[in-house]
Image 1 (cartoon, one colour):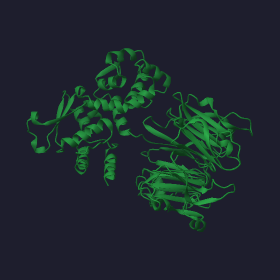
Image 2 (cartoon, rainbow, N blue to C red):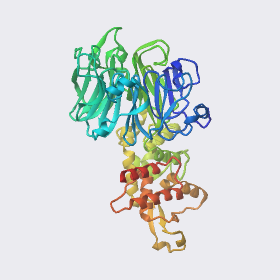
Image 3 (cartoon, one colour):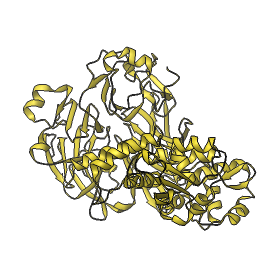
Length: 611
């Protein structure tokens, strides 16, 4: 694998027929193992893998997939048992659907939503789960090419989210109507809906699982969580105490929809994360595969707390057929439970009625880590957080000790105005409180201050330190970063540097007093612009202003400077969008924004909105 390749996706569990493209003949993977490509999104059913690439594949993978080497950002690929690609190779099939926004997987089918809001189905349609109509489904039975689902265009509906269960597909529209196709909920006998039909209204969110048959949960405009199920084994997955062998539509008792963080479903159990008293608690229902310590063959019909996970900061759960993978907010920490024979639980032939902790130290706090499960597999992958470029830039100037002006202790220097703003405290008190801690603790503490991400692994210690500054806990500090930066951007009194706008390069000798100026904090200019970062490192004497020779208007430069603080672009009614967009593209070259800058992406969205 290329040394430059950045791995962001790991797998454990089923690898029969080498459907994961790993360079191994092993059919069982007992530890999280890196895949040979990077992904933006990924889902998996039974030995079929659907993923959206970010076009940074390793060299060998590209050589063996010669037709795939021109992959673009957001391209869709499908690999595995149900792909037309030859089995037992690392080859994937690429499909030219444009940029893909979302993918979902059932046991043997995928649903795909593109950036221009087209909906496609792929795989089995025997039970109507592709929503392409009865005649097409019976003629095709299994589609080896993505086939467009035209129902929503024909009805004038826009789909904003897609979800899949074992043999059903769900489509949440912008009007909050939820449609579904596949195995029916409405008859005592098994029947199929080959076209999407309206199931619920006023739906805000939905949860389904690739291994769960005919069961799902919805969050609606009222204050309750709702569940639907059908079948003789579904009633104890709802957590309602209901004992019915036919269609059930119920409200989950004592559960406020605003408390629900995540829900997952397997073949005979469900798990839920609830936010209660500022703590995420995990509950299970059904068989012992839910993580509840039950005798073999027994099950519970009511949601039962898994006390072992109380203080583990669990924020996401996904389930396969008999197992569950959970992600903690603690970086690199995961939990597994249930039953597995081929690596679903990272061990061989294991039955965990109690959760087991798994540590994977490949991820950094600035990355958003996601998890997903196939029926017998686990996937852990990362992608850049929403404000990655801003956080990266702030972290770098702290770690590299660039333009710092406050020595907290020997070897720990920070930017005074920024840290005072974050801790709501003057520098003298900051030094007094933090002087009792060692250098390693303070480094991780300030990494957390600069980014709003938890670098200090001991959350209890982090909260103890923050409480000395009258900050309740780390979540308060983390959520305040955006507001603190916005406040700094408006604090003209504390700004210590001026950019003089010349307008045109030939005005170099223009009187400085007649030039318009924009004020900025010098450390922020250092963080966000390679031009000034290099300039400040070369110029040894102290300077407090500089001329801008980009030739751009003060309106455009002002928007760029605000972007430095907020990582967002806002135009007023008086702005000329075409001119601003063009000037900002040129200005970012002049200011030499870092390669990971999100500015171009924001500008493209302005263009899309304008269209």
